[in-house]
Image (cartoon, rainbow, N blue to C red; front, side, top):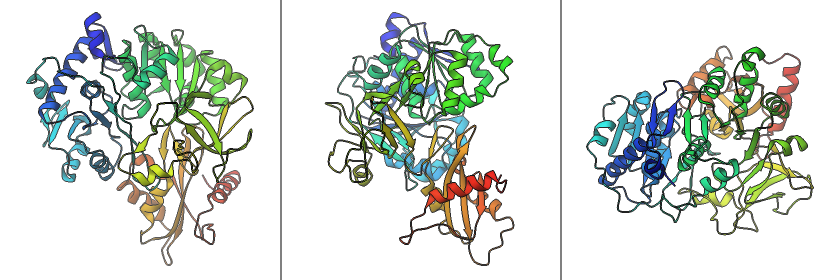
Length: 518
């Protein structure tokens, strides 16, 4: 199923509406424009299995790129536009992109990428950027003849790596045509949440994230209407729900917090009665936050636990969650197993690493061009079982509860941040002897990044935190830059050199309670 299916039966129906500007793309327009782009990419030499990448803010053209790939048997890689130029260039090189489409709103990053070996076929929409061809002109000059074949494409998306390099997750291409049923995300999530032609789906999240991209693609595959916010603002979100009579949406817990922080009279002033499902994922949600959302909106709050790797998933509806507060659900895709360090399965309510055993016929994920990292995700005795490093427990009834996320991984505002990358950044800094990065609780973001720094001998502490912050801002994405730099005399390490981060978390909480740290 794809836009062409609905262009034939309901051509003027909106496939996508921008919540702020009201700009609308009909199914007929999305079908034709994605077809034209498919011809442009084919003329550039892209064939089934090749990769087209995009660097885009939330704009309709992102889905022209998405569907051009999906109807051409291509992989589409959406690059996080908040990455530094070095990080973005790595993703483009690692995925092997043969074409790049960028938004002129990201012109600085687009220009900087020209110095890093970007693909020869480069297009820009929404304005001009030197070194990129005009997207609109390219589409205007392309044909609209039906494609001889339309093998189904897929996404090739990246998550952050524990050593600082993003990891590409590549699945085999679906063995179906784009107009045939059977694409996994459409089958699983479309069926679970009942998406279809009557769906009006509000997306408040960046299009480069896996869940927003996949869910919006699912809604369009099933003939619904996507309403896409340019960016999330709590009052604007509620206004969009009311104006467009939104039936379904997906958010992260940080958005819940910001919505709940609106004055009650503001929240109650919007009509949210059209909402059928409010799905959340991407980060742990405090029990009290979710309870408050259910108290406000009613039993429409659904949760699933999954990852960009898509190695497994669990799901819990509102009624079951109320009976089991804090659970992330029961199996939806794959079978979860909680295992100890030696790989042995643990008993009821024992905490260990969460592995997923794939459903029959499903191929385990692989990190693109990285067999070592792929191997590290596999169970020692069951090669098809895989983990993304999350810790959790299964209760007697099979409900999964998460107790930690990927060991030291920090989740801030629904985004995964790996401390090792930040620590490596400072490892050779002349003013730093040692550094440890942890996540600490934050009421709004879930967690925030804190760096403990042991200054090098003879280094003045005056202004050091500001210098380190500026150093980081020049080299990594801003959302990874520590919110706090705490200067200490030493750091807790084992005789083998491993940081004991639990002590740092305890220290932070103790000092925060005494008013020692902000």
